[in-house]
Length: 352
Image (tube, rainbow, N blue to C red; front, top):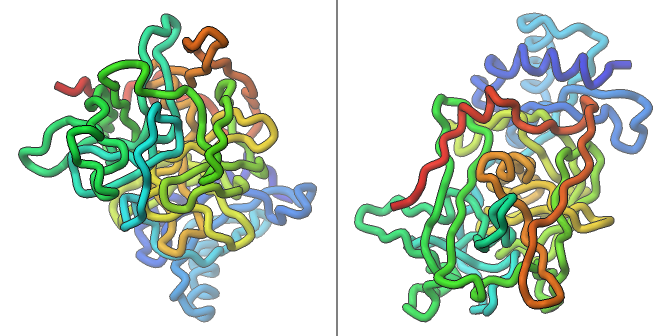
């Protein structure tokens, strides 16, 4: 029986070589049998769904022979579509004031993503911000402004009345190693934001009490995304190195699935997965497979470290405070906080 420590060690050794294969989209570590965790861990290789069984068999033999994976380390292959950023597809979304987490948002671009969650600076909580992905809140079009719109521009949100504020900060990798795709937008006034989370299309809003420091394989999650609405998911693998859009590698990511059901679609980028049992923020979606059955995420705790933020929690007097943190797990089947060295590889850019 292989342990998570063994599998993580071999995954790190072989990941760069494996991701050069055009038929491989991601590689991570999870349970060999999710229904029987006692059977131990395995390396999960997410291969293109068009690959023939013959080529898959040949790939298995080649991986073990050329990359030195011992027979005691199980290697499972899961067929998926190509991973891509969940940017935007046409879908009607409404204007909501004040703005909770889980609704349509965008930069001054013809796209729409998800306002993942409302956050505040920490430890001195004075301002509220919308947290989402960089590729949702940072415009790429020459001449575009730093304005932020809700609903997103693709959802007919460009009218002046829908401009809620502007880009505040975003992340850039210093080297070719990517950990997060993250940005903050600051509203014109705090009262434009609602420090709660919208549950699908029910209109119900819940309080997110804080965030988890670690996310573990097997964890049950829920989320609201701009396109798919309310969804349930389960963490299939952690420590997953993912090739997004065929060229950008994100390391040590989280893969979320749900019994071959759709968990995320274009426009869900920026949505925040919550732990099902207590609604603590867990992971941030930014990409997924084209068929929507896999969501690619990073731990929310990482952006808490990078930006110095916490989930915003409403108070009885109509104000807000910083949420709490919990759940650090020093286990190989769980994510860990970014180290000081890793944090130095992420640059925080202040928008002009």
